[in-house]
Image (cartoon, rainbow, N blue to C red; front, side):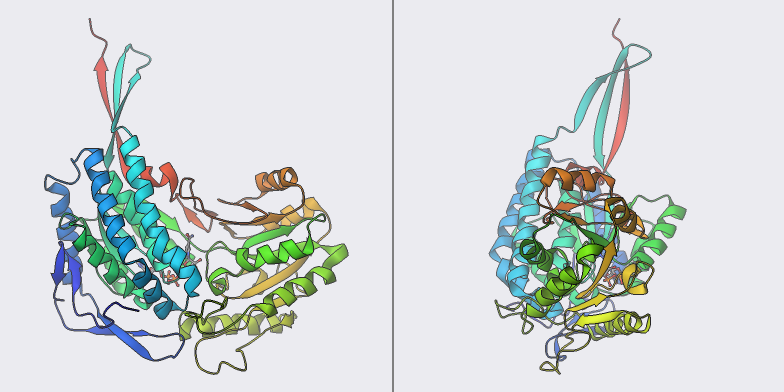
Length: 485
Ligand code: NAD
């Protein structure tokens, strides 16, 4: 981590601003359990300053009224400066939340840069106005796409850099201004983002960053000068934010939790499938929202699949996330580790059999580690099959036939991701069509910057990424013109 781990100011109105009151919170290493840095904690005065700066920047000429080419040029300069700091950002995230460094280099280093460039290209190619022939009366309607205004972007700790950029890149491309509130566990890496914004000469107030926990998030969400909220986090917090935005009639995007299913079909190759599941079900030590953590396998070969999935899970190297050979790092925080361990206990107490893992690794008594854990012998009503664990914990469930498998996949409060594993891609696509979810992978799962991502049911409302992710930051305005005489 090259960035300064002790920070004393916020990034507001294009510059470093001293906090209204001196109060800090620590950044704790999940590997050593020791403090590795600190950041200031915002007060409501700091949030007012950040939102005020974002609103002024919106009114000032030189941002929302820029032509799309000029705004795209700003995004590209920002991307270049961020790219120059990609390794710093990635290693900072690894130090903060324990993400394996090889993943962090892509997801937290490279991906935010790619997203800025994707949205720069998209906005440049998207006309601000289109003309439509009107009906029932003859005439023309000009349909304009205008920025929604000041965006409150609230991010979680699991993929802090890229999930912030899911919001910042389309919001800036649309001509909005942003106040970002990172998660308290991962506030440090956002300083690298601010440094890149300064180096790129991003106009003052277009991006502002304040730190804080739930109370500061709540204040920001309900702030009278915020026009839209973009939230990624837990379903519990999303429900509350959705309620507040409902009362305020404030547009909101909610990217929430999941309990996605992997449907393993009877023709799936065992070796290839379990290799794929190592990523589709356990990426970032299972702390990824769309993980396929309920693995549905044919009842006739239940034991074969339980053995293969358990062997794969047990084989993943655990250790220091800065080590490039490590696949399983520590969980992000003590609080989260304890929650995951208590859900494992709950699985056992409800009659589940742990076939591998089940606790803290014996050779890692320091750090918030949990072994990759596999549960067998429960049905879809068990807590371990219904609740999001958000850790390296898989549940293998049996199904009788394909209709049963799809019914089990759909018997969930959530609908975010999911996968199918089969030798026949067309059969996989048929299954994908029947699962109630916002995204689905056939023999793998990977997000696509150009296609929408988001959930149904308790997994959220709205979409990020793709042109749909840009539209989430735009209002349409229809201007009616009569037919010329
Ligand atoms: P969290 O809900 O505890 O916190 C997320 C962020 O919201 C943090 O910045 C937090 O300070 C803030 N916050 C919490 N309560 C708030 C409130 N009432 N008002 C305003 N802000 C509030 O979630 P977390 O533990 O940081 O992240 C893990 C969760 O995020 C998991 O449930 C995971 O599935 C979900 N997630 C979803 C996606 C997705 O795209 N659907 C992606 C990643 C993570």
